[in-house]
Image (cartoon, rainbow over all chains, first blue to last red; front, side):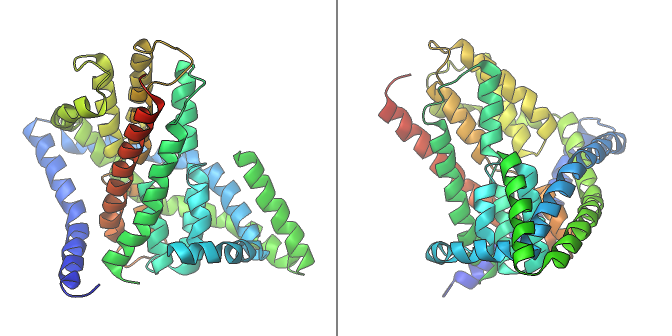
Length: 185
Length: 194
């Protein structure tokens, strides 16, 4: 970035820093003003978090072991090298590209892959940030479409998958672009 | 599909490790990764509890209904085939807002309700309508206010500022939504009335 890019970057960073405190304040004020017993409700809700995490432990074990073996054997490096010409054309860090393919298929598998990328490259490396952003801005498309269409018995989904994958691709490209904008390369 | 991916990674990994003479490294990686998965889960626990707790307060405060009322006018543009007072619109909006706040458990039943309401408006029961496609494109591309899980993973691996990716996530999601809505509208026009 040049010129007023520094200012934009500063503004965006401020946005990221204030987002969480602002969300806390808005929610707590809304709760208190509606007479919600905020602490009691918080504790009840936080209990749900425990079961959410416990539920994903088996999947994380299975998937992190698979990724760990795949990486240790050198297979991941082969795959990344295979991808890297395509990745460099799109400007995507090559180690993040497998995530782009896995993300629409499985949420827990991509969570495992993101944590692997983050621990291999560092959470504050460019690849780590792009992987985090991709994980946060995309969804498990195949699962969602199967579940939602399956629930009403629709078989012919026409262009839904194509449109959803186009949006997904846009968010992959935009993740790289937004991380460059915020953090530089 | 995940069955094949998982199988493929393990088999390819162990076979390649044997060929590369790295079989010991690979079996150590298997054992270490299993342990790492548990410590990652423990690292996630705190932030995910914090977030689900805060979101329970948001839900109890009527924030979901409040935001839903604010975005409802836009639904006419996105779902011109669905009458404005139809229960499908209410369920769609509530699902999208629940997703936006990261209320996964609340979002799914609302989404399934939205689909069954949309199915009532569907003349050819086996084929998707434009409204269904638009809803699912929005659902899968929509903005998440705070990507709590990713922030938790970053915090667990020692990021200096785990939440710094919120801004980029919002931008990337906004791009995905814009592109998704445009694509769905173009496809709808191309496929003709339905």
